[in-house]
Length: 389
Image (cartoon, rainbow, N blue to C red; front, side, top):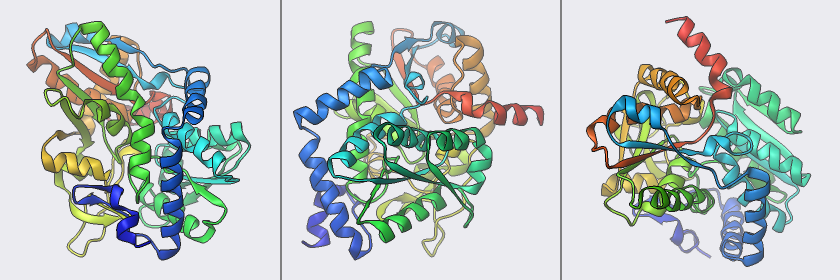
């Protein structure tokens, strides 16, 4: 089977595809076939729903942030509480779907990449639950920033490999995970955490993360009797954002807004290129090499983005904006003090833009912010940054 026919479903306009070594083409095609086989399978979805309810604690609440709304004086602000999931973030949604797929494919060894550590923790969690060997690749810089999550992964039985190449961040962790897969594809399942990578990963991650928008749409209609004015989500690779947007894509009156770090503004400033086996908007030099990026939120520190986000940006269906480090730190504190909810630094990017948007929108309208993770992992880092101001 040719590469073109293999990845036909893996394109979003001009973006996506599968640009991988020949030995991986067959592996990815098997994965794509198995995903297609099981994604609508009744038994598979019954098992997934069981774990969503009894293990993760879904559905997650859609919480009306009354004090924050009153302070800003504009649209009603609702928080989709993915931070309340087991392991503390949205990552568990996709990880559970993929581990059930890995189980059906007979996998014994699982590998993953992680930036902020939340995907690594979620992967280590389900590997512990199903008794699978687990290796997590993490940039050496991120292991320092997120030392507590490194300990969590090791406590759960995972081997954490600190990657020292390049900037020693998320991009390099993905590089090493892909190299591992090339070397060990016969017995290894790569449990990719974001809506990036070669086909079928972006489609697969979107499918499992779409539970976020399926729930929030049903919840907002029950609470407000109408669709929201806008849905906001932070974006690095794009898994929580595509999950937050998925069920609203056909509702063109709903604004879909992804919020990037000003220091890693892939969708705002990127150009078309290939990274990690797929085509997307990417921050790159004239030779096509990825540019260095930095964000205070390790989970957003990536020079590329999901191919569907690249397409949504290009067509104008979704908007992508940036916020600064100072705005993120302010939002982190404001949400904590007004609602008693400490968000992940990643999620605080979405909160930061909401603080600017909500006052410009009528009081009858509502805005949904996806609180993709909780801030326990970031408190020590924020403490140090605020102390140095």
